[in-house]
Length: 102
Image 1 (cartoon, rainbow, N blue to C red):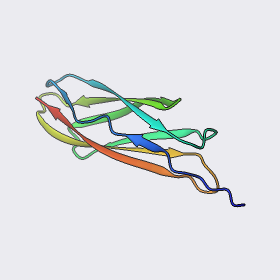
Image 2 (tube, rainbow, N blue to C red; image 1 turned 135 degrees about the vertical axis):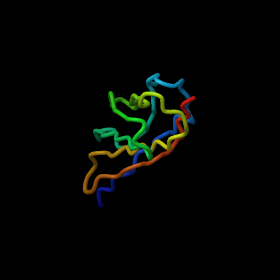
Image 3 (cartoon, one colour; image 1 turned 120 degrees about the vertical axis):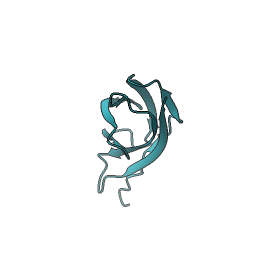
Image 4 (tube, helix red, strand yellow; image 1 turned 45 degrees about the horizontal axis):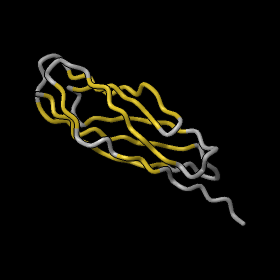
């Protein structure tokens, strides 16, 4: 029998909004049937006017902080990637949502 690593499921937090100059903390949830796997969460934005910092990941939950640059208004796509430590090969899940800064 071959060991198969199943990809985790990463649930989108849905589109988010924040006022100008106001950081936003976003919670994300995930599920992995391979319960022994550890996970890494990364966040990328399509506009350098917003920074994305992962604060935590573990136990089926993650948190990140999105911080708009001073005075920025507009929409930014945020892409989250969750990668597990599974063997024989790590597996990933990806989701994208929109941050609106008004």
